[in-house]
Length: 188
Image (spheres, rainbow, N blue to C red):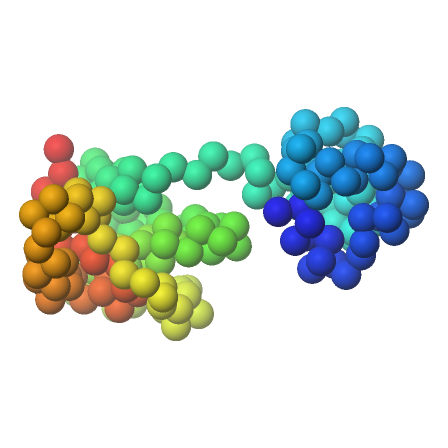
């Protein structure tokens, strides 16, 4: 992960060490994963960030969030819809920028799931689509995401027809993003 950042910034570990004043051993340990940037002192993070043209927050941001499983995320979203109701969920989601934040973090399924939910609830309630997510609506996941319970069932039963049926019965707003979702209302 850290080495990818250096490659992206087109800087070698040696050069980063020289320009930042951070020992090469520390930079090397970060590159090979032996040390994590979030475990470094604030001074070390500051020096590295400064050379890379980033803020300390940008350096640490992706590492500060513990990403839940996608199944847990989708369950939480459905529970929020149930708890708030369609309109309040739409208002809360559209007034925040959660989908964009997820997308910026590289959490594409989560971002697209929120957009799909907004689009689905808008259709269900005869509300015109908000253009806030137009750029995200152009994105599609490469591989379909199925609920894990369905994947397990298909594997145990050795029946891929279950997955095919799920695709054909998926809610269109979710299927557009390659997210296979057939029920968002029936949550416990």
